[in-house]
Amino acid sequence: MNSAASPFFRLRENGIDLFVRLTPKAALDRIDGVETAADGRSHLKARVRAVPENGAANAALERMIAKTLGIPASAVSVVAGGTARLKTLRVVGDATALAKKVEAFSKQSRT
Picture 1 (cartoon, rainbow, N blue to C red):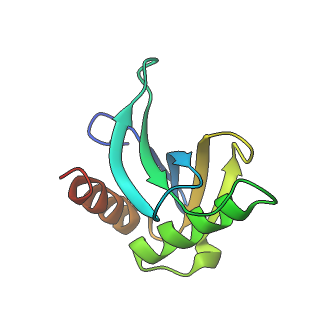
Picture 2 (cartoon, one colour):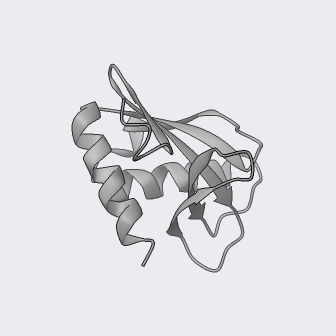
Picture 3 (cartoon, rainbow, N blue to C red):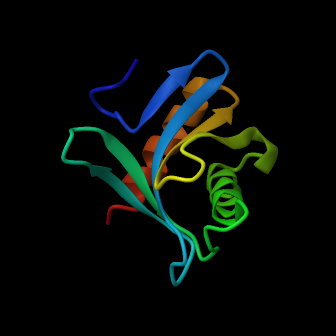
């Protein structure tokens, strides 16, 4: 695993788990880079315009991540933290290719 360089995701056999801190009701949908919390855990910061009701914000997050990675929306799903700000997204596909894409867009969004 590449946990030292990219602790905000974990490689899996059939894809990656992506750790995200979601802010709903934002002015626009965007990814704000990687942040390390006080407890030392890192996560990708994301904002969506959707409200956190009836799963709307989670669905918007899934669509945004899928679009950013260039994969079908059906390949991304929230698997933990459905009603919390800190979420785990499961992204199904080639783990190595997904890891490279996630690292690339997380670095671009920091600037």
